[in-house]
Length: 197
Image (cartoon, rainbow, N blue to C red):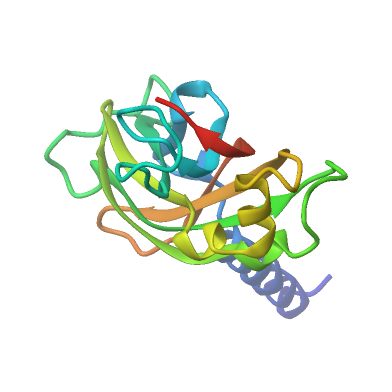
């Protein structure tokens, strides 16, 4: 094989390697890895059409429609024990910028239009320093969902409760870079009529 052919092959291999490196958004290929430690303290979310308020009686003035947010705990760590990242260095934290949420359910009582409330580009503003945890609140069920006829029917007892899964993907980057990384998480949500604290 002549040197010109060898150089051409080498250039192609290097180009393909560079392309695959740019397209990979794997968290585990970064020096700083960010993970979701826990969503909603490890419990399913109870999403109610109505909260009976402090008197625990439905139909009184302290009743309210709850907005469903959940706490999410993020933790950042080094890729392995051999990697050292100074806590005040350029690449010393992970910045979570947004999330998407996709609804799914195998429950026969789930409404057909549940996926209308998938979330794309939901905002998160979290800085997760290396070897530390950060907690943020994330919106799961917006107020418009509570106004849906199917949710109101659960609230007045004319429709049954149901369960669904929310697949959540958080996105962000290591400080000092713009390489976007996706972090998967999930949550079970039980849709009910009334909650009494």
